[in-house]
Amino acid sequence: MFSNNTPAPLENLAAFAVVFTAAVAGTIAFQKYIEMVRRDARVAAQCKNNES
Image 1 (cartoon, rainbow, N blue to C red):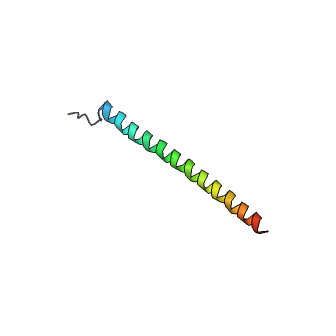
Image 2: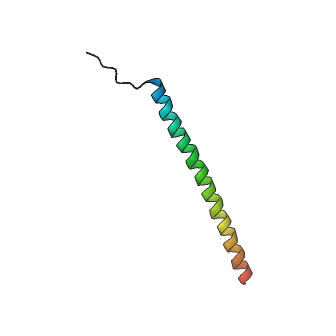
Image 3: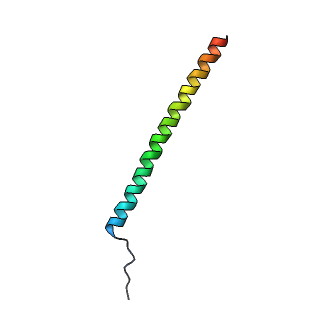
């Protein structure tokens, strides 16, 4: 009459680990992107100041 449709605890842990790892990787990638944009903006500002 009743069926057990809940996933096993290890499946839950594995899914959490995958999502957590993806979130960490995404955060690191976003931080590197922000660093790159800031560096490019500094270089562009320096070039603009040198032209004057």
